[in-house]
Length: 158
Image (tube, rainbow, N blue to C red):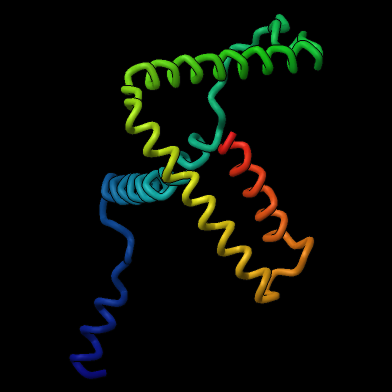
């Protein structure tokens, strides 16, 4: 054998075990600590996930509330009372807003009335022209609208 082979064999004859037992214990403890830290680090997200998925414990009251004891008729009555209360509140607010507005004067009211009656008369004339041109058949919605406008204008003339 050559010298280079002899050096290799001498090195390979050497034991891979540590020379002293306390070194072996240190290596084993080091590996155990490393593995424990890795396991702990990778298990943290799962622990948080399972903790957040659990519902929080609450105290349970054994008594039945008055709302649970109500009958269907009582529920409907309570809803109607609440709706009526809301309606009265809105009505009160509307009255307050209306009371703050100023009423139009006599001239303004007459002017508005005249404009409205003139607009009705113009609409009647337009519908009469459409009827003469046979655009609106008798009994149609526009024809009935014309009849109503004629009634309104005759009432306003009186």
